[in-house]
Figure 1 (cartoon, one colour):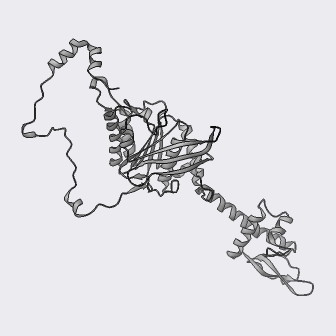
Figure 2 (tube, helix red, strand yellow):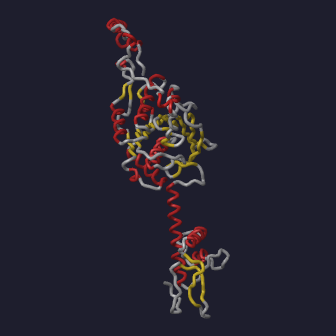
Figure 3 (tube, helix red, strand yellow):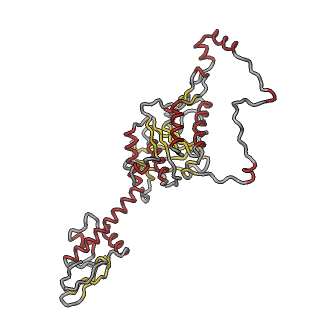
Length: 406
């Protein structure tokens, strides 16, 4: 979208160009090398920094997002960039690990130019389920903005200004929202709908990316720009500025099977990183969210569901043992006994939908917690000898000889 003398000649003719040249004021150097009033002062390495070494890099997301810097994430359409960016924001808001990497709890803003509020809400619910919470848990800290129906360009390069970059009203509104929410993470989706210039124009791209990096400095946080690569195998599209200006560049790729069909697995690569080393991670899409493809790793939601089921199984075992005692059935905690409790509970229809393995684990947990006593005096038999076996901790030896459970 650059505008040069050729474009001006086509628009106004050669005579029009000549008139503009004749009307232009000649350049006058400032006396004694005085700086232009618009010049930005240089920032130098000052004496305090030379006396004391600055602290280490501060991470918003460990090994991924350094505070005060710009990062970018590229991937084909439908690769899951927006979802992954929203997961990043949700984990940061809650201070939860993102793909196993520690985050610093902070408010976040996601600007999604192509998704409507319903789609963003559906993704929020899926992400919340994975994290074991609800979207209401981040109500005042995560702000997902839909750009559908809006003019989403954050900058343009008007011909009447000679091709110089100009920030739009949408940029100023978005920046103010970020500041108002005190966000320290901003996810922008995506470069193709936000940047109003020629992606191959290095100077224009550098200016736009510098503006985003400036926002990261201003909020003492991170700005993550999502983008699409070109049709070739390149990771990013356009000038090399798109790769060089961000401090981190990552690429998300959907993996295919041997027949070329998309699978549930993706590859996330840190292609370029200024603070750390490139790395590759295999992700699995499950129930609307990404997780590391590690069978031994649970999401927070899965962990909470497992713990809830374990507690339900434990209560089922305790209640089932009490029911068996009322039926005058004695059970044992020994796996080799014929009256092993999980077997007896299953045979008597008291398994409550739990497997024998789950009942066995729950039995051991109930004993460890003191909820069940494996050698509790139960009642006197016909021979007046006291029978012992599994019983709730509160069980007391009946005094009436009937053996009625408490």
